[in-house]
Length: 220
Image 1 (spheres, rainbow, N blue to C red):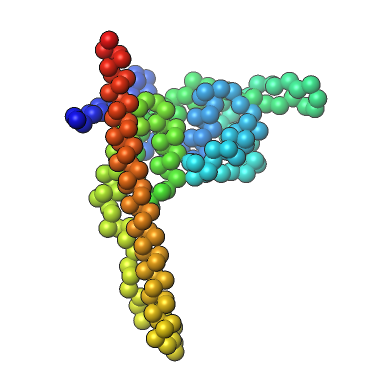
Image 2 (image 1 turned 30 degrees about the horizontal axis):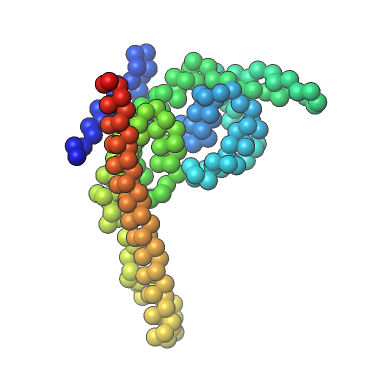
């Protein structure tokens, strides 16, 4: 079966892509959530409670409202009253055109995988930049997979302890146990990386199938 080729699309006219268009994870989450619908800070809190574990991120309620205020200060979002039958009105936050531009700039920026496997950056990228298109999701998965293949040896921990790691007056059994504990930790890291790479490979195949199916439908 032919490999699906993904052309990296140029940014839309009027959008300037800055290398590594830097946004904090909470900024990305807020901009992405507001891009689909207006939300209150409480709505964001509920989303994080439900989905935060899957993107490897959580935040305190005070952080959410503080960051929403910063989005308003930067003119990336604006608040509108959300009347309530009881109690004070809440604030609904809506994305501005500048906020959408900033989010798209981040989506179009190059993804540089971190050395640490299972870093939240990849989960956040896939969850929010991947919604741009299956092709974008495939591009991210392939970038991550290639990096993990190239750096697989970097994820393997040493299984040798230096003499100063043992401490004084350890008997043979205690030295053996400390070495065995290090081996167990090394194996854990190896299993994690192997599992991640297996998932990336399976996901690459699945995304390629989705893209082929979509292309066939469009060609009819």
